[in-house]
Image: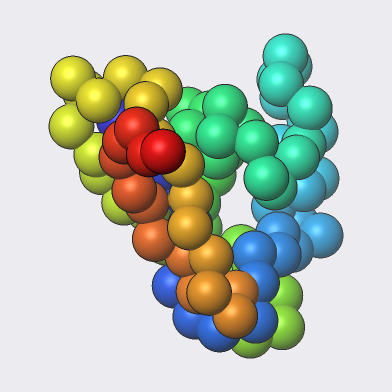
Length: 94
């Protein structure tokens, strides 16, 4: 599965052009930067791939695509530190 993350400090921000391309498609998932379903949406992934990262984000945001194993399913979350994001598989904790 492919997931869009920010690979720089400062946070995830889509450019106006990327948002326009996304809203011109019929996307059933709302644009929500914190939602894993949004970040793994094939339409969003294709837009970022097609733009090759250039012009897909604004400010210091650098949007990249990370691939996670399919057997993880939706058992993952995005961890953010000062805007820089990494993907982590969910584990139990007490």
